[in-house]
Image (cartoon, rainbow, N blue to C red; front, side, top):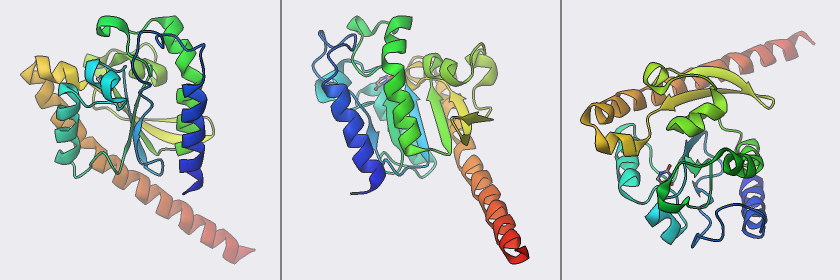
Length: 208
Ligand code: URA
């Protein structure tokens, strides 16, 4: 088991035993996250719905089926990314998470990001977008990547509509497919800048 996988398992068991977490009482399962802890991309949604709560896995209902199609459209799948949410127990009747709930889950989500150290974070919907890009409006910024420093790492954040919104509007669905095309372009960009950094390091070593 890799170091990241070990740390991810540890954080999951800490969450499972944290009785102070809100929404826990009405939920069937903790919906921690799914995918590869070694992934370079994390997708962050809002919170579990009915099916996620039943199964303990994020994005397994209708919105999840659309997310799977979006991933496939850029040659990704659930095994080579990591998927999680801003709250990890189901809010009753799928209501929006409250600020105090977001606060309670935040340290765990931050730790997940710190362990995985993704190069790209795709936010799905306005709650996860607001974590990285406070004060912006999704209709203006969706599909527009932004590079920022998170902890000590440079990451690209790509805000996107929530897939559930794509199920309600064919226009938003079309935009989601368009916006997903940014992902391979940004992957390419991060690879190139890594090559440049590697090259600079080699040059510096030669000079020493
Ligand atoms: N919607 C979300 O935001 N997250 C899920 O896990 C499922 C639906």
